[in-house]
Length: 125
Image (cartoon, rainbow, N blue to C red; front, top):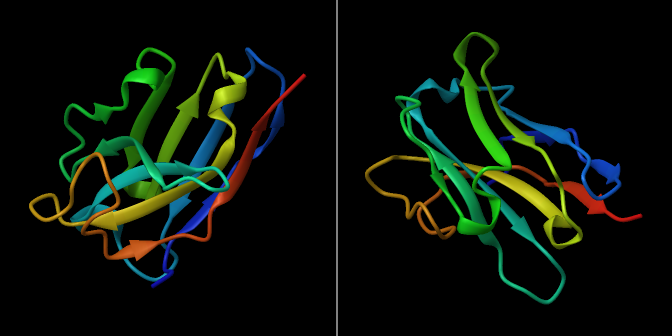
């Protein structure tokens, strides 16, 4: 069920930065944990980072630690993914998912209730 909207993707050179946004036009994200995922053709969707309802310490996939930062702005009903020092292997379609902290798996796409349509990130020179 698509109820989230991602934006901010694009084409960027290696070493560049992008900030992705995830928002919900019809409901509050305050009550949901948010996971960011990426998918490339022929592969399963993989978890990038998860931030819980409280906005506490996030769970990052190892390859993005130190380069990606997730944050929540409840006033804007938006979750951001700041991506720095991008690498070609970061290329993919990025999705956000919303779910219950106690139900979702923080490293896979299991248990999420809402999804967005995805935004394409291409890292290439």
